[in-house]
Length: 339
Ligand SMILES: *[C@@H]1O[C@H](CO)[C@@H](O)[C@H](O)[C@H]1NC(C)=O
Ligand SMILES: *[C@@H]1O[C@H](CO)[C@@H](O)[C@H](O)[C@H]1NC(C)=O
Ligand SMILES: *[C@@H]1O[C@H](CO)[C@@H](O)[C@H](O)[C@H]1NC(C)=O
Figure (cartoon, rainbow, N blue to C red):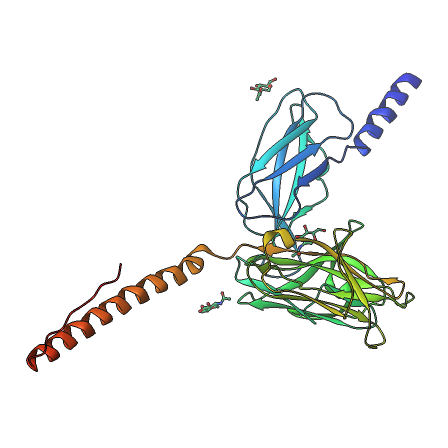
C-alpha cells in the first residue's frame, strides 16, 4: 500500500513539475534579408518530444494576448528543436511548446521571446520625444504610437528580461505613454495593436544618483550618406567643455567640444558609442545605420546623363544657327574641332 501511495505522490508530483521549455531567438534585431533561428529546449531532456511554435498577437478589444500557431512540427527522439524563419520583416513575439505521448501531454508554454525591427514596415510606428536613446530619470520620455490602429499600446522589455505595459512605469493615455518612473532602466520599447507590432527602439534611462552625463544619439536608424551629430550632455544642463567620444571602446574624437559630427555616415560607422568628460562617462548606445534605397541612389546619375545630352544638343543647335547666320551674310565660317 505504501508503495502505491508513494508512486501516486511521485506521479502527481511529476505532473506538477511539468517542464517549461526554454526558447532562444537569434538574432534579436532584424536586418534586411536575414533570417532568424528559433531554438526550443525541454529542460528535463528525454526523448520523443514534438514541438509547437506560436506567434503572439494582440486582439482588437482589450489587453488580451492571443497566439497563433505558426509551424506545427514533429521531431522524434530529441529534446531540442530549431526552426528558421526567412526574412521576417517586423517585430514579433514567439513562443514554443512541447508535447509527447498518446494522448499527447503538453509542457507549459515557453516565455515569449521577441525579435525586433528597427525599421517600420507597419501601419503603426513608435515616436520618441525627446528623440534620443539616453535620458536622465528626472526627464520624462514621451512615447507615441502613430498610425491607424484603434488599440495601440506601448510595451517594453527590460535588459533583465521582463515585459511590461508602459503604464507600469508612467502615465498611459491610449496610444501615448509618458515614462515618469525614477528607476533607471535599459529597455526596448515598441507598440502593439490589432494591426501588428511597430518598430522598436532602445532606451536607456540614467540613474539620478549618479550625477552623470548622457550621450545624445539618434534613437532610430540613420540612413547611409546622412549627416549625424552626436552630443554629450550633463543633467544640470551645464555646457561640457572638453569631451571625448568613443566607438566600440576606441577613441574617435579626443578633447573636442560637446558634439561630434559624421558628415556622411556609412555602414562602418555602426557600433556602440559613448562619451567622456572630466572623469565622467556616459552609458554606451548603439547607433544603427541602414542602407539608402538604390533607386534614389541611381537617380543623380540619370539626371547627369540627361543634362549632358541636352547640353550637347543645345551647343550643336547654336553652332548650326551661327553657321546659317554667317552664311546668309556671305561670310565664310570654319568650324574647328580640336580633338
Ligand atoms: C515519430 O514517431 C511516431 C510513432 O512513434 C511515428 O508515427 C511518426 O511518423 C514519427 N515522426 C517522425 C517525424 O519521425
Ligand atoms: C538596439 O541595440 C542593439 C544592441 O544592443 C542593436 O543591435 C540594435 O540595432 C539597436 N536598435 C536600434 C533601433 O538602434
Ligand atoms: C491610414 O488610413 C488612411 C485611410 O484609410 C490611409 O490613407 C493612410 O495611409 C493610413 N495611414 C497609415 C500610416 O497607414
